[in-house]
Image 1 (cartoon, helix red, strand yellow):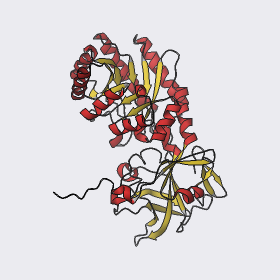
Image 2: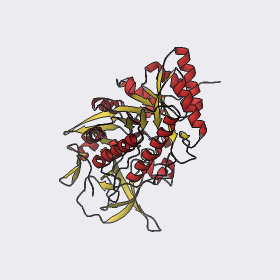
Image 3: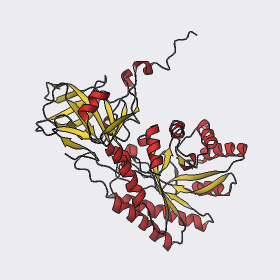
Image 4: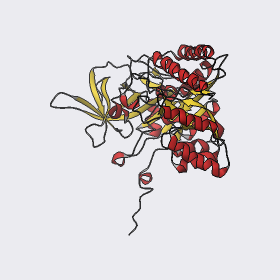
Length: 433
């Protein structure tokens, strides 16, 4: 079984950050999101220290939609990365944590007027525009406030990345961005470049998520730089090229992510070579890792309630969580590795489907988990849940969201409290008409 970050096995028990999962369950209860702080910091440094080039300015931006709390924003600030937000809520969280507004990039395909006003008022460094309507909304705000705003336009290069259709984002019918093959996109770029309220910096693309093929990114570079060259011929200088994120991570033994130390350097060298050949320098290149920083740092811990073998022979193990805290399996048919955290070295005797307590037949957390025969009270850990688990958690069935803790160097701390029943009804009203 593949272990991640600071995970280790001591006396048949899983430890993370030098802390026993048995002790964590005893202290904080289950279900429980555990985040390996040292692993997250290590991954930020991997990207920051390898995404550098002697002839190209670079910037690494953490995509906060993968996992966002005040503690995470503080960590990203300390590790000297910039921050990508996609909503007013993510922006509010970042600012509440003291993250510098000038290092925030505001994404999204349909930012509301309220969100754009909030971003401008807060001094957000860069707004990534998705379409002409959004540009018009922002222009009105800027003209009223007599303020200039850095902007980048999201475009779609039509690259087909091999990933799940719901997270492939640059197909020609994608809801995100504007096609580089449309003359209307050039017209909008000309408008943005000429308008005095905009400090138009460049273009952005994001070809999808959970991508393992380096070639997809190299192809995106070629298409995007070709487009930069076409814009240059029309008198428009592109100073920043944001290549997005989507870098794949390991969820199972068979997964083979890119070796990022090699890939990042090769990607920048590819950019530099083409840019020099086409006389496009100086050019700043940006990327937006999210999942690649936090996914393997996360482990979700559950308590086993029992097992069941159906008449058809299917074996289930029940845990005290559900699809409400682990939605990606049913949403994307995602696969995960699970283990009994308090019986790590026991023989894996059976294949079980891990299911939760939600009133849904589709409430599946792990479709095939190779486990010792589970017993009531055992702890079951699901690996690589740091990205899009806490972020996508819900209160379906009025279930309470689990707490989030950070572990590091033998210590643990709460960064998000466990919800209470009172939290569930906090916004309910019973007023009469």
